[in-house]
Image (tube, rainbow, N blue to C red; front, side, top):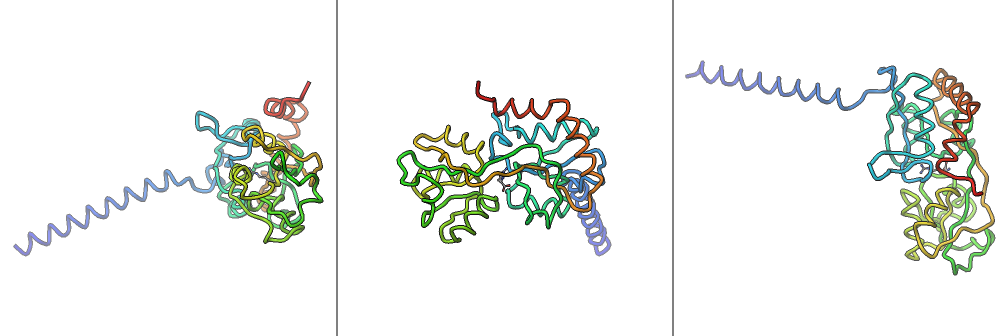
Length: 260
Ligand code: ARG
């Protein structure tokens, strides 16, 4: 009897071991390790609620200017592109930690970010604008003082408004669409955000408009880890070729048709 119990115990232990091993395997397969060791993969992080730079289409794919530029660069480099959607304010940390190779997210180049990451050459420009209800008393930037301003957390719009008007006047949202929804509901008096997404959000929400006065002009680029000079060089080389071939202009024109 005793012997029998022993055998059962041994068998049970073996089963547990085998199951664990199986779990372990499954994990390494699905939890993609750092792209660096897969060699051929370019892992891009973004925040896909920022049309026309990145958004989720009807087929649940992440599309937009940044997604297409990254794909074109990856093609040139003979790499496979993988896109990870995350919070905008996690992107820099993700680049630093190596969980993504690049962040392409309509990301503005600025000195503060340059302390943490490197930037590629720029591929587009952006303007911080102010969205208000059509009947708003806010007519120009000068009227923002004392108002409740909605922003996407961790963006340059957030930084400018927090330093210009104080934390108490700025309400942070996880994405621009939520900030604009809060504006439509009257929870904030205006939203400061990049001009092209602003146009998209205003189109999607009745009764809103964009002020003509601009808050700030900016350049967009890809963020790359400081110790990844090799990728930075390759990325810039591919980007330059794509610019020279007219491919970047073509992608931008596809999503932001120039008015005739
Ligand atoms: N250009 C702004 C910044 O760099 C906003 C970018 C937001 N991008 C996004 N994919 N949500 O801070």
